[in-house]
Length: 344
Image (cartoon, rainbow, N blue to C red; front, side, top):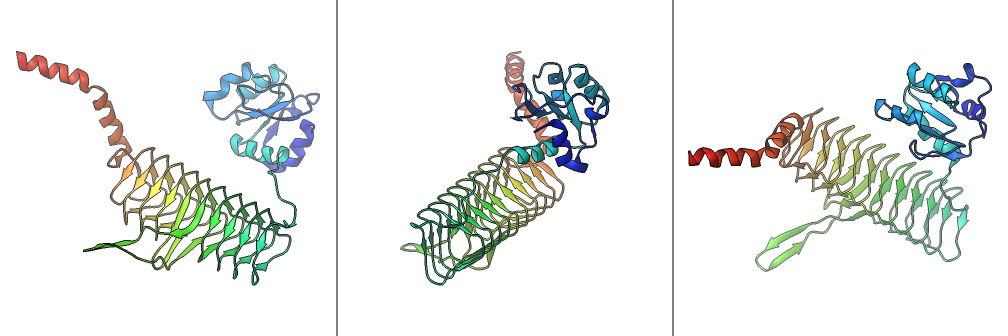
């Protein structure tokens, strides 16, 4: 599409553009690209001073820029069309949706799918090859179920939710509207419940429920377990990356983000807007307050206050961890000093 057409489609999200200063700069855009590898005909974006240097070298025909007149002038000098936004990365995400739409199954049920008697189907539902849907399942309008998905009995799925190939939804699961479950994920499988006895382990049946509220997204090969009693719940608009484990009985709030390989033991309570970076581990029954952040590989064994930033194993305040890490880097030097002082 033409650059000027793109601006019209984006509407009020565009705060300024080069069309106002150079009306003849209206390139045809055929796609998107990273700023450092962009070619003619593509649009890219720059966010922050770190990437501003690429304005002088990029081959992109158009850029999404921050509200920075110096960077905008540099783009004009190089003959690059630009639009400016207060959040360039967010605007770039909106541009991607204009150029790319994910594959979607056609509406209808594939002949090889098994839909048992008693399943309630909404309007415009898509069910792919070899999917299996057990009795008592309720599926909302516009739901997409890709091939090889297995849905156990007594599951409810809200409008426009997408279940990608080979994911499994176990019994006693409620999935809200506009959720996305990626390939290989298992939602509502049995929690890890065993009682030790004199003769071995006695299995505690997991009779609870699993609830995913509206807008939740679960990454590939992630697991969300159901508890013995009560419920495991993931709050509205929370996003889980690939290979995340949510143990039985966990309660995760709204608008959280859990990066790859995060593991929550049973009964963990996570507040709203919490960020857990890759490979964070959280011990049984720990509570993490609203807006807390844990950096990569943090091991959380005790409660975290709201708004805190923690790092390390075991977790301490991020500022303290930075000081500790600086000392650790100097340990060889300190050891040599100690040895020399002992000789003296």
